[in-house]
Image (cartoon, rainbow, N blue to C red; front, side, top):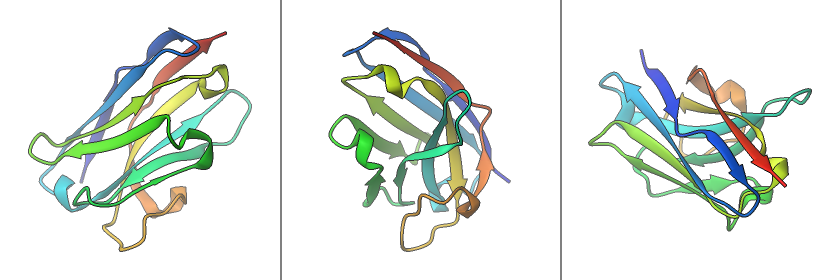
Length: 125
């Protein structure tokens, strides 16, 4: 069992930065691939980024490449999402998710077994 708690959301002007954190409980965190997803009002949940259990591999959706960076610290049971050059279209609730340590990182929500409660990110123009 893994419990996930996100933090670091807030309000920021376009062009600004935020760093989201996800704290995980449970001894199996270091064996989990981790992902970040987001959901804007009236839209479906969409994939943002993923990182392998070792941290060696990362995967991003095209709209955030070059602006967002996912990282993890297995010693601290934490995963992070550094978001730079934020745009109004990045406004959403951001969710942390944990999935099985499969070889290929995936954007499919069904591949992630545990989810946090989400943190709101609002980017004003």
